[in-house]
Length: 226
Image 1 (cartoon, one colour):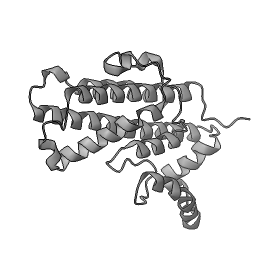
Image 2: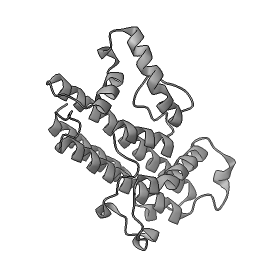
Image 3: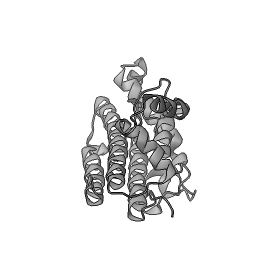
Image 4: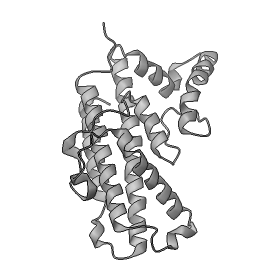
């Protein structure tokens, strides 16, 4: 995985996820709209997981080239590439000190560094941001703002935390639909305006995440300062 290929992955993945989402106005039935919510969630989780693992694959390549990776990424990279740790005792100690971070996002401890647990709510997303060394309070580029609904009127400064509620609501609705919760048959379960708001918010978050990672790579913010 080299830088050019990573940038191509970013572009391809975002374009693919965006094109997967149909035009909401073309969906005529409640069931179509529910399927739309599942697709929004799948686009969100799929992109975040793919881009995070690709990022660490690139870091592994850079390290193999002899680049000195900074402390945060080096620690996480050792956990990502567990085969790098030959001593089982050291591996166990590393996971012990790292596991409490994972427990903030997941109820169970998995032996995998990058893990959405098939439930990418905001806490799990924040955990991925931590792995990528991106602050949840990073400013969102105004070029990525949606111009529909409330987005056009609000002047509030945006960050990833700004989208916490909408990310959690997307997960909640997705789980209700996927597990056949009786709520999905209620007339007010999904309103078209809410679906559009979730779709717009996720696209803003994904575009900004891509931009943040490209900035990290372009400016080699993963390198250990000499």
